[in-house]
Length: 107
View (cartoon, rainbow, N blue to C red):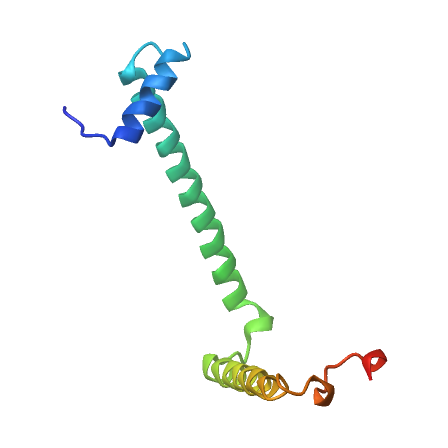
């Protein structure tokens, strides 16, 4: 098997071998692949836990009557209010004294 590496990865392998922690480049690559496999397994377990929690949440009494449409409508209202509030603040940029957020001690 042949593998093409970037110069940075080649340098990393040389440093690892040079440190004495690894016998050769193959040893470094094997260890890296073991770490990658362990990371993949941990990620799969994390996703499994999240999926089970999702199913549990969807089947709980708390989810009864939940509606994505109502949630989206609520978020639209909240987001719109924030955007309007943010735009409103820009009108006070030239006259900070008229801002409703000014510190009362500054008046």
